[in-house]
Image 1: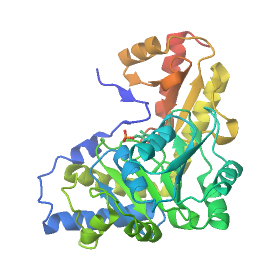
Image 2 (image 1 turned 90 degrees about the horizontal axis):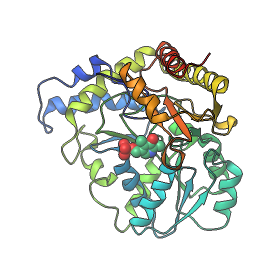
Image 3 (image 1 turned 90 degrees about the vertical axis):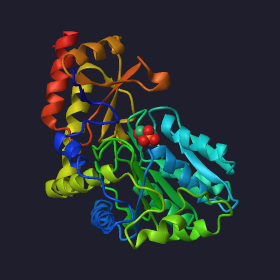
Amino acid sequence: MYKKLFIPGPTHVREEILLAQAVPMIGHRSKEYSDLQLEVTPKLQQLLYTQQRVYLYACSSTGMMEGSVRQASTGKPILNTVCGAFSNRWHQITKENGIPCEKVEVPLGQAITPPLVDEALSKGDYDAITIVMNESSTGVMNPVQEIAALIHEKYPDVLILVDAVSCMAGVKIEFDAWGLDVCLAGVQKCFALPPGLTVCAVSDRARERAKQVQYPGHYFAYAQMDKRYDKGQTPATPAISLIQALNKQMDDILAEGLENRWKRHQEMAAYVQDWARRYFKLFSDERYLSPTLTNIENTRGINVAWLNEELGKRGAMISNGYGDLKEKCFRIAHMGDLTLDDLKWLTAQIEDILGLN
Ligand SMILES: *Cc1c(COP(=O)(O)O)cnc(C)c1O
């Protein structure tokens, strides 16, 4: 049976978007392709409130988590902020690429805050910092704007690399005004597209920094992307079908209105948070709750895997807790093209299955 996905990726994809991929293939060196890329890029710049470059990579988000750290360090370490599984992955990736790095970590459910970043950066001489904006394993949204403001004030040479995988296109991210250097996201989360494509905004200063890096890699190198950027092409074959769908989805997102889209995510989050407080408990720090997914503490000791099986029979799927939080928590994603009505339907199913009232 078809299940509507309430998991933090891949998310529910509307049929119109699936079908937008089903158009005749075009060559990636053709004018038709250049026109497509040159059409979709300004829409992405609008989404991210930026005049700087937005690249399209044929990979899932993890690819560009690697690509971005490879191009950020000229020998000085990178500070990896860690507040859960995905931010920890970025630390592992940095280490495994042989890039000098340190991590600063908070317990699960807590946020990375400006004072924490200030203290960590004051202890060393760093080239860059990595921050996962929306930690999908815990349901925390880190205050990236405030952190970026602090860094610009006190550590102006530190590049700010942001994984916005589970919140880009669901919350407002003002790339230029906040002064971010890299902001990346795979499209299978809030963009509500099938997986396989990563959108990545890169600042001019991050591109300059990359030129000073001895081994910036090849596939993700901004310098490689820049060779054909103005022409509307990529160095290697792009994910053409996904970009067709992205172009259609960006029209739909802009037609919904960016402010409306952010508001819809806030409303879905508020609804699920209230529901969770009523029947369970929120796992994470109330001051930093994610607008795109809610991590609910399993205070009733329910069998989450069983609940999900029962939901499956009714056409829905949620997520268990991530890693160490499995069965201790469960997660409901409210991102992408889901609506408040979808969430009301879902919580009614859960109440019915568990006999809550
Ligand atoms: C899903 C997710 C990732 C990994 O994305 P892939 O597209 O599977 O590579 C990284 N960071 C965050 C915050 C995520 O939610």
